[in-house]
Image (cartoon, rainbow, N blue to C red; front, side, top):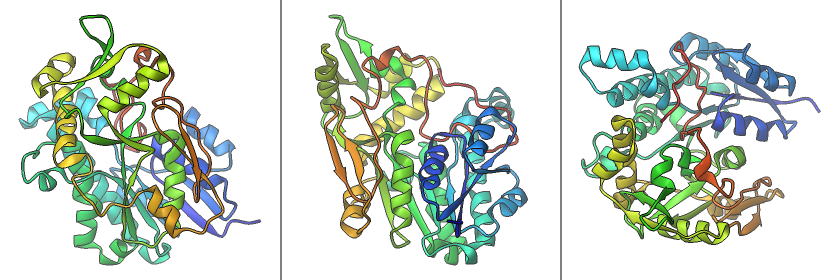
Length: 377
C-alpha cells in the first residue's frame, strides 16, 4: 500500500517528535517526513533507515520550514525552551542584553514557535481538517491572574499556540489542535534531590512547592505521545487536550512509589526558596519552582476544565485500536483508540533516583542554528 498522506514532524530525533514518528510509521497511509537541523546525526540516520524521510530544517529559518512543510497533510509542532536556557552563549547574550536567561530562552522559543506558525500557514490549504497538531502548555500569566508572570517555559508555547496563530492565521487556527503534556514520568532527572532526596531518618522524600493534595497529570512521553497525537489526528479540529497517563497528587505518587519499590518514602511541601537552594542552577530552580507552585493554584493545566482527555477521545472514537494507560503503581487499562504502550512503576526503573541524566518536557533536539543544549544539572 502506497502512502496517501504526509505528516511532517518537527524535532523528529527528540522525545515528542520521535514518539509521534514511531506511531505514524505503523500506519501505511502516512509518509513520515522528519525535520532535524542535522540529517547526518546518528539518530537521524537510524530514523532514515526505518523509512522516515529526513529533511534539514532550522527553527530559526522560516524559509527552510516552508520548504519542509510543503504539501503536508499533518504538521506536528514542538519547541524547546531548555536548549537556549542552558547554552553558555545564550546566557552570555542574555547578560549583554541585561535580561535573565529565563527571559532570553522565552524570546528564542517564542520566535521559533512563530516561525513554525508562519511556515505552516503557507501550506494551510494542503493540511487536513485537523492537520496542525501542536505541543503546548497553559498560559500561566493569564490563568493565574498575573501571579505567575515569569513561568516562561509555559508562556513561550501558549503565547504562540494558540494565541499567535488565532490572531494572525484564522484558516490555520481552524485546523489546529493543542496538546498539553503532563509532567514527564522521567522528569525526576531534572531535580533528583527534590524528587528523591533523603529525609533525616534516611527514608526517601519528595519535596516541591506543590500542595500535598493538588492533583497533577503524569505522562510517559516516549511511550505515549505518539499514541495520543495519532488519536487526536482522528478527532475534529479546534480542541485542546491534556496528554497524561494518570492524574494524582505527589503525596499519592510517593505512596504508590514506596509500595512498588518496598522502601519508605513520603512527600513534603517546601517553599520556592527551599527548592532553589536545592538546585545547583538558581535560575533553573526558580523556573521549575514556579511550575510546581503554579500546579497548586490555578493548577498545572491552568484550571482549564474544557481540556479533553484520553477518555474523551475514546468516547468519541470507533477505532479498533487499544490503549494502555498506567497509574504510577503499574495498574494497566486497555482501551480504544490508542496503540499499546508500557509504563512501569512511576514510568521509571525501580530506582529512578540513581539516574544522572536530566530529561525536559520538550524535545531535546529541536532544530536550531545553535549548538546542542547543555544538560540540566
